[in-house]
Image (cartoon, rainbow, N blue to C red; front, side, top):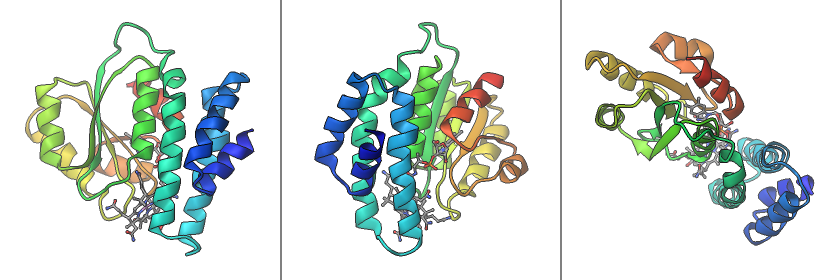
Length: 204
Ligand code: B12
């Protein structure tokens, strides 16, 4: 069943993914397993084939849309474990110039599941908008995602602007090209995946 889900992402079977994910949920497979062993596994394969030039942007986009359709179905179960009382307010967005949003959405869902109030700003978000929203919404955390080496530098601008305006919200960063060293160098907190992002936010 989980292999079928991974294959559906790999083969861009957006119509079939709903059937497979629903069947897995009905037969008691957890949302977490569907995510890790199914959807993410399929997307990892596409990522590898994209890097090696076997597939191109349109195929990656179709796989991404298939993955998103699957994620929509497990969303409820992933976030339902959250407490009623909010543990804090988080804004999350993908930085300016960057349109990747699957990882960011996933992290947002996991934060919700852990009891945080999450406001998703979307993609291609300028540093000024992160800072304005952090101020307006009086948030505890500012989550930033970057998937391109060329856009990760945007994160420093956000951190610097938050400091310059004396906003105490804690910056959290993530995305495939980032490292803990990079995050430390800009004064942000880093985690490499959605599960450890939850441990990170809880620890802060
Ligand atoms: C899907 C995808 C796309 C889709 C995005 C669709 C969408 N709606 O998101 C499309 C087709 C649009 C796309 C476009 C491009 N892409 Co692209 N894409 C990918 C791909 C294959 C998968 C990314 C993904 O969704 N992974 C699955 C999720 C679950 O994982 P994740 O994003 O890493 O997120 C996890 C962690 O990083 C972390 N995390 C993420 N954000 C945050 C935030 C916080 C606060 C925290 C704590 C944690 C955290 O937790 C997440 C969950 O576990 C990657 C390959 C790869 N290996 O990453 C390339 C990749 C990122 N893309 C790449 C490139 C080059 C491009 C393009 C420039 C291609 C082009 N020639 O046009 C464009 C850029 C468009 C733009 N301006 O953004 C390169 C980037 C290289 C680099 N280092 O700069 C990659 C690495 C592929 C490669 N090897 O060449 N892409």
